[in-house]
Length: 147
Image 1 (cartoon, rainbow, N blue to C red):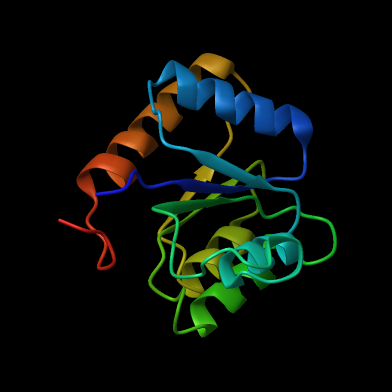
Image 2 (cartoon, rainbow, N blue to C red; image 1 turned 90 degrees about the vertical axis):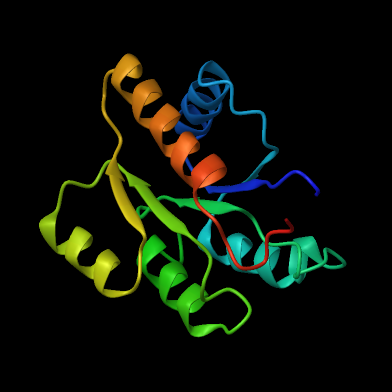
């Protein structure tokens, strides 16, 4: 069984570093692919554009998706993921600073699997990422996973 990877969709370099540090602290050794906007996330998933030649059947175990992205926002990305037969079942965890109730309602309405607000405190964030990793990378089963 090949090791599953994580797709992190985040435009803020500080938040990318924080997330990677938290994953490392939680001893989550899965490869993390970082894309910086919604359009690139879709290119990655579809094997087009900057990611032409990538096998689109090699799906991430989970997508960590920020809502506040330049150009195409996270809600639009989620809509596109759910409307594509190849990606519609992918676990998508919204990982955002947004505390707007309407964002949460819209994300869940469109099929987000989880909505996590990024805590300001690193220790809280690291604990949240550890729980996220345990559930989505170890316990959760997906239909395309071998074994």
